[in-house]
Image (cartoon, rainbow, N blue to C red):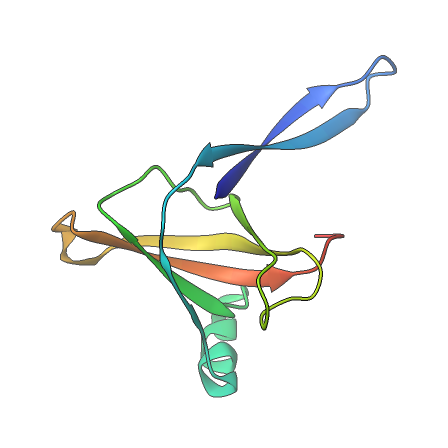
Length: 105
């Protein structure tokens, strides 16, 4: 499941961020090695995982994927989308770069 945030205002004018599913599909999830994570961190975003989605689904930076399956997490962690690439623009699959964060985001 891929989730996207919506920001609304409460009665006092403050902002409330809510998350809603925008896509339910299978993907292949790959944790990166420590050296790959460090190498990617030069771009100021730490990429900890990559996901491969078939076709060209509407996935955007800022979206997130909740992860609850072991051994990746014992509670719900979130993988936040930091980059999306359509390799060779062939529309066969998207490579999505992700950053692992805990519940506090």
